[in-house]
Length: 607
Image (cartoon, rainbow, N blue to C red; front, side):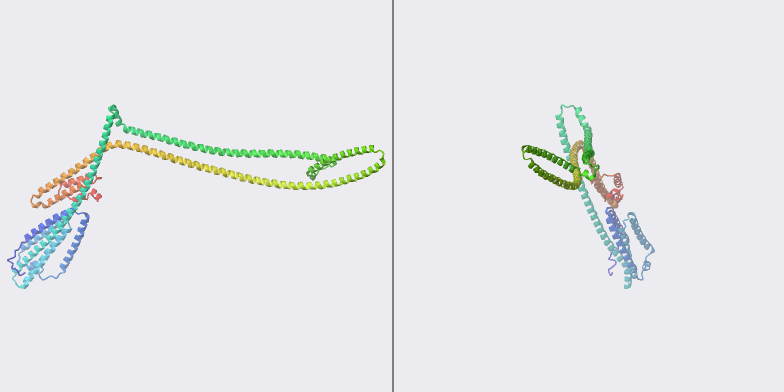
C-alpha cells in the first residue's frame, strides 16, 4: 500500500476484458468437448457439483449481504471527480461481458461449470469493488490527496483482478487438462475394446474362411477323382446326377416314409389281429365252459331223474311182489287185512317161512325114514309084538311131548326173533337214514369246496396267463419300438448327412459375400478416418480464430470413426439406415451434435 504508484504498471481494463474473453473461449471449447464425450453418469456428477457450487455461491452472497457496509457504498459518492463518460464505458463493458456469458450459457446449455465461472467472476467484480472502496477508505484515513488515493485504489484493484484471473486460469487449465486426460483414457479404452472385438471378428472370419477353403479344396479334389474315375460316363449323366441328388434324396425320404408307414400299419394290424384272436379265443373258451357247465348240469339232472325213476320203479315192483307174497301168505293163513307193521315185517316172516318149510321137509323125510326102519324092524321081530307095542307107545308119547315142546319153544323163539328183527330193522333204518343224510351233507360240502377250488384255480390260471401275455406284449412292443427308433435315427442321420453335403456347397458363397461386405465397410471407415485427420491437419494451419470449430470437427470425426468401428466390430449387428443417416449428417455438418448419434435407438439398446 505504501509503494510508489509511478513504479507500478497499471494494466488497462480492456486488457483484463480481453484476458477474460480468451479464458471464457477456452473454457467454452473444453466444456463443449467434455459434454459431448462424457456419459450420462458424468453429466449427473457435474450437475451435482454445479448444485454444490450454486449452494456455495448463495452462501457467499448471503455472507456478502450480511457483512457490515461502510459509509462509502456507491461508486458515485467515492468518485466525485470521475466523469460520467468513463463510468458509462466501464458499465457497458461489464454488461457486454455478462451478455456474452449468458448467450454462451443458453447456446450450449453447458450450464454447470459456466454458471460456476460466471458467479465467480461476478463475485470477483463485486469483491474488487469492495476492495477498491476499502482501499480508498484506508487512503482517505491516512490523509493523502484524493487523486493519489484514487490511483492507488485503481492500481490495487487491477493487481487483485490480475491475480484472481491468474488463479482462475490455472484452475480452468487444471480442470481442462484433467477432463482431456479422462477423455483420452476413455477413448483409448473404447479403441482397445473396439480393436479387440474387430481382431476377434476378423480372426474368426479368417479361420472360417480357411476351413471352408480347405473343405472346398478337399471336396473339389474328391470330385476331380470321381470325375477321373468316371471318365467313361457321359457328361449329361453326370450333370443329371448332380442336379437330381436333392430330388433323389426327397424321393428316397418319401419312399422310406411310405414304407415305414406301411410297416407300422402292418405291425399295428398284426397286433390288432392278435389281440382280436386272443379275445375271441378267451370268449369262446368262456362260452364253451359255460355251455359245458350247463350241459353237465342237465346231464346230471337227467341221470338223477332217470335213476330216481328206475329206483322208484324197482321199489314199486318190489313192493308189489312183497305185497303179493304177503297177501298170499296171509290168505293162506286166513288173514283178511294187512297192516303197515306186517308189511314192514314181511321180509323176516318170509325168511322164517322158508326156514320152517325147509325144517318140515327135513322132518317129514326123517319121519318117513323112521317109519320105514320101524316097519323093517317089525317085520324082522314078529315074535315080540306085545313088547313092541308097549315100547312104541312109550316112544310115541316121548315123541309127542318132544314135538310139542319143540313147537312151543320154536313159536316162542320165532316171536322173539321177530321182535328182535323188527327192532333191528327200525334201528338200522334210522342209522341208514342218518348215514345217508351225513353222506349227502359231506357230498354237498365236498362238491362246493371242489367247485370253489376249481373256480379259484381257473381264475388264478387266467390271471397269470393274462399277466404273462400282457408282459410279453409290453416286452415285444418296447423291443419293436426300440428297433424302429434305432432304424429311424439311422435313416435320419443318413438323410441329414446327405442334405448337409449338398447344402455345404452353397453355404460358402453366402459366407464369402458377408466377409466381403464387412471388409468393404471397414475399409470405407478407415478411409473416412484418414480423410478427417487430413482435414483437421489442414485446418490446424489456419489462424487461431477458428480453434473452436477445428476442435469440434476433430472430435466429431473421431466420434464418428469410433462409432463406426463399434458398430461394425460386433459380429451379430447389422447397420440400419438410421445409423448411416446419423453418420452422414455428422460428416456433412462439423458442428452436429454427437450426442444425437450416441443417444440413437440403437445405442440406447446397446447400453
